[in-house]
Length: 348
Ligand SMILES: Nc1ncnc2c1ncn2[C@@H]1O[C@H](COP(=O)(O)OP(=O)(O)OP(=O)(O)O)[C@@H](O)[C@H]1O
Ligand SMILES: [Mg+2]
Image (cartoon, rainbow, N blue to C red; front, side, top):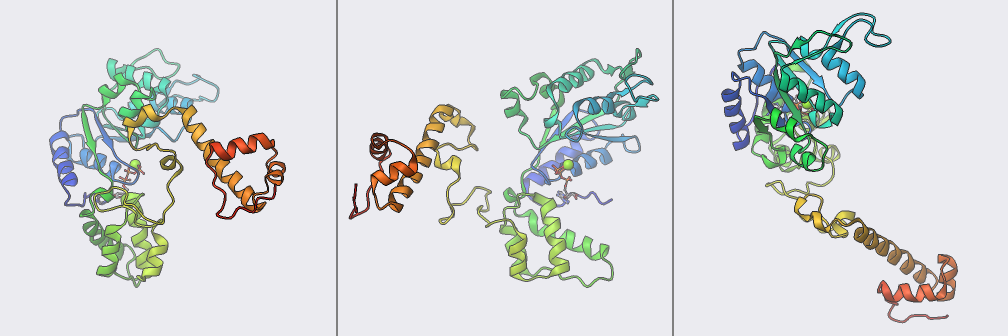
């Protein structure tokens, strides 16, 4: 399989350097990045450049299995360790001995399993379930995640000691929208790949105009989404209409990756309520009580205004529809700042 890392951005250049520097060291590494950004690709590159190539490359997906299964998958078990354990099974940790153990989606691992993993990393050995023996842990451990583990740590979702144990080296892959210069190179690479792959089929090559459009798009699914869009474009057509159908929502981000203001786009509920979930420094403003009050006020104001408008500001009718007392309605109108229309047809 082709595992060339394509790209010319600073971020990708730095990652190539890091891979060369780290590959032979066997230092524990965490690869960070959004979904589809190339985390597994980076891990494969680390392996291929290391002196462990030819030794096992063992991947454990920490998000794919419930806790007990994940535990037995990692550590293995003896015959009879639990009902259904008909014969001994080597765990992934043992299989990876001398090679590379890739813990994918480490941010999704439960706290109890995090403790067990930490124990293994500290002691260098472990016992399969139901076994007295200890097995030496001789693998190079690389983890990947789309979580921000430092935030998870602050929130108590990720063990601090495990974080420091795992992340001697940190490799952060930026989302594609923050490195748009890579997009034309990726397109070129995948156009060649698919032309070879769909040998004999008449494929369309994206025009410069389409490439420009793709380079300006915000790519929430990153390189994986780019691959899918390209494949469909090359097979189904090059037209702008079909392209717009394939891209999710408006290209609402500027080239530096920040959300651009789109005039006719309604604000998100969070934005409306005055807090920004992308700014962790706003933690003080996240009083649930205050937010609830604000949200309730907003909903009440909308509903009461609507009912008043529909009843032609007939307050008695409105109280019946809203199922509240006349006094409450008057109070709400004042408190929520509900304005009557220019010529209120006040029939109450
Ligand atoms: N810089 C790149 N050059 C070439 N191909 C890339 C690059 N980045 C990602 N890809 C390709 O994009 C696809 C998705 O990458 P990968 O599976 O490594 O992402 P990931 O970060 O592990 O995603 P997820 O979080 O969903 O597991 C793969 O086919 C990979 O080869
Ligand atoms: Mg992955």
